[in-house]
Length: 564
Image (cartoon, rainbow, N blue to C red; front, side, top):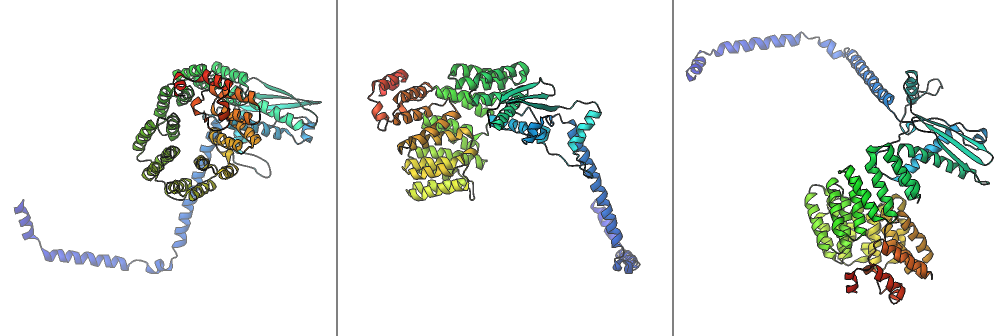
C-alpha cells in the first residue's frame, strides 16, 4: 500500500493541476459576468416572486381550513349528546317572562346546579349540546349554526337525534310539566303555587324535571344530591335503579349506598357496601378511602391504616391521602408513625418539589401543634422548595417568625398569605390554629370574615368552622356559635366532634337535656371521651354530674376507665 502511494506522489504533475484550476476559475468568472445584472439590480423580479409566495400560502391556508372544517363537522355529526329544544308554554307564562326558550334554559341550569351539588368525580353521563361551543353561520340575517345544520342533516339522513323537549301547562295555581328524553320514559311534575309565589313554584318544577333527567341518566349523582338533602329513601331508590339498569356502574352504586348507611349511623352496613364495591372493582380507590374513615371513626386504627395504604397504592400521587392518614395517626398520638410516613414520602417524591412542599407544610403543622417548633422549622428548611411570592412562601416566613418567638410578625405573615389567596385551606388553617394557640381571638374572627369559604370543598370547612364556633362560645356569642356549628354538621352528619360543640352550645344556652343528647350522639359516632377538657367549661361542671358520668361509663373502654 505504501509503495502505491509513493508511486502516485512521484507521478503527480503540479503544473498540470495548476493549469486545470486556472481554467476552472476562468470559466466561473465568465459565467458570473454573463448574468443579467441590470435585471437583478432593478428588482423587477420581486413582485412576481412575492405574488407566487402569497398565492401558495393562500392555497395552503384554504386547504387547511377546509380540512379543519371537515374534521370538526364530522366529529360534531358523530356526537351523541342531547339537543335541548324549546319548551311549549302557555301564553300566561310568556307574559311573565317564561317563554319556551327561558324554560329550557332554566331546566338546564337546574341540571347543572344538581351536578355541581353532587360534586362527583364520576364521568358525566348526560351531556347537553347547548353546553358545547358552536359556530355561528348566520347568512343574510337568517340564524344558522353548525350544530343546527348537523341536526337537520341527521334528520334528513334518517339518523336519530337525541332530544329533550317538553311542555308546561297552568290551570289556576297548578303548574304541570311533561318532559321527554329520547330513549327514556316521560318525566312529569306537578307543583302548586301559593299566592305571590309563582316564581318559587316554577323553580321547584324545573328542579323536579332536572332530578328526573338525572334519575334516568345518572342516578348515582342524583343519589348524592338526595343524600345531601336528607332524602335517604329516595336516594336508595336511585341507587337500586342504577343497579338494575347499569350493572357496569354497580361499584359506584355500592359506594354511594355505603356513604348513606354511614350517615344513617350504620357503620357495619356501610363497610359491607364498600367491600362489595371493592369486590366488583378491586382497583377502585374511593371505597378504600371511605373504609379508612369509617375504621378511624370506630377507632380501628390498624384497619384504617391498611385501607389508607391500599388507597394510596391505587393513587400514589395523591398527597392529600398521605396527609389524611398522617393526621389520623397524629390525632391518635402515634407521632413516630407520622414521622416515618413523611420520611418515606419525602424519599419517594424526591424529584417532585411541589408534592414535597405540600407534604412538608402538613408535617410542620403537626409538629407545631405538638410544640416542636425547631423540628417544624427544620422540616420546612429541608423539604420546602417552592420559590417565589406565593401563599406557602408567606406561611414559611410565619413559621420562621414563630420559631424566633416573634408572634406578631408570624401572624402578620399568615394574614398576608390569606390576603394573597383567601381560598387557601393552608392559609386559613395556619391563621386559625396559630391565633387560637396565642388566644388572639380578634385575629381568628378577622380570618372568618376574610376567607372565601364558598370556594373551599365542604369537608375543608368543617374543622376551622368548628373551632370558630367554639370561639364564639368562649366569647359568649352562643347564637353565632349555634348557627355555625349547625352548618358544620350539615356538611357531614357522620363526623363526631361537631356534635360535642353543639352540645356545649346548648349547655351555655341553658338547655341541658339537648346538651346530653348531642354529647351522646358524638360519643356514639366515635368521639373519644379522653378528649374532653375537664378544666374548661362546661366540662368542669359536667364531670361532677351523675348523668354525665353514666354517659361516659357507657362509652369508655376499660383502658380509658383505668387511665381516669
